[in-house]
Length: 525
Image 1 (tube, rainbow, N blue to C red):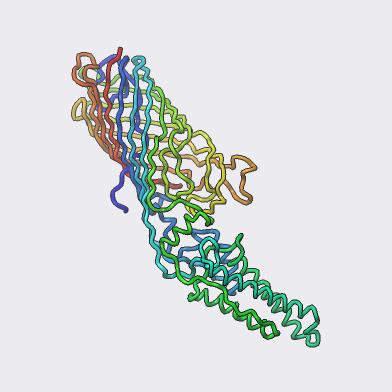
Image 2: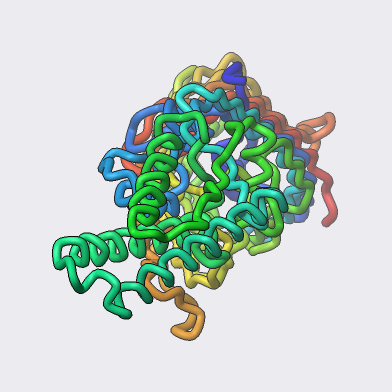
């Protein structure tokens, strides 16, 4: 992965407008002539394997790449590390699963069918329906250096029955030993020797705290870590030494029968085992597999209308001039949003309603000209099931799923596309579009569905961004028999290449795209 990718950046800019005069132009006609129908067929091919994070290019799966995989990817390990620090007396004690290397790529193929009809010489109605095939591919590799942890053998979800039985015996013996020492102290067995009694009380207190930490870390179904120190690692040796020291201390007070050792991990994780952790139905995450995910569904459909404000373009023998049109459309929530249980899914649409307005102006003279665009997209709020977690730290327990009210940030963009006309019907273009997206506003859909202690606004992290897209391509347009004195099949076609070349703030896919359009016109009345 990391090779050439395709990205279809924004939905095609189709602004309806018409003219009483000739409609020949080097750019795709911005209108459906009065009484005609336009059939639009399009194909977008987009792909990315990197993204900009606050302006820095990183791999799409960078969140899963680490030289010491641990609490940075799995925040829930923080409590386990704290307990290990108390158990071993080492403040730097940490569960590390190994060194990881990752690759990921997202491809989306989009087929578009659209229909437009010229109601008057200035007004056009149109609609588009995209069909999207989204494909996510990823690879995950993990090495055991510098691993200090593997699966907890006492965990019901990831361990084995032998480990569970060993731990059950360990904690039973530990509890019995503590009870015996406590009874001895209460019965006055050490009253004749105050120093020995103080030592016995200190041993009981220390051993009880150790037993509680060990049980919370290894044995309690509600709090046990899915990972445990490797028996042969320095961390594993430190845990074993701590247990041995307590067993020795108890034996000095005549407390016997506590000889069983805690079951520690015997092998580090490999990629299959880590995937098991992420995807196990009985585990805390319950995610979809990281490998390949293919989704084929409709995208977000659009319906709208456009109005010609001014058309003084290509009058008579003069090339160029000025034309201006405005467009308004509604984007419908017909696409499928990305799955909250697949950390790299791109979905087939935003699955929300948008209200979009656009103004387009073509200016030029002779062989040269430019298309200027301005756009405002109001993205409406909707409810969605999401993980209450940062997009930059995607591995969160399934218990963090909640219904959220998400009001996406609005988008504002400006674009300029200079072009060179090789003829009235054919031109090359090169342009750029700058887009700003505001921050999302996220709350829980209801107070009853709120997760105690969780802040829903973390979901909006990285949602505000600025992006610059570079575009190059060619267009051909000839309305043929639909123009006065013309003949031939009315059609227009375009091919463009796009790339996100820069971004600042937020999270932005670093994508490239090929976009192609073919539109055929048929006169009706």
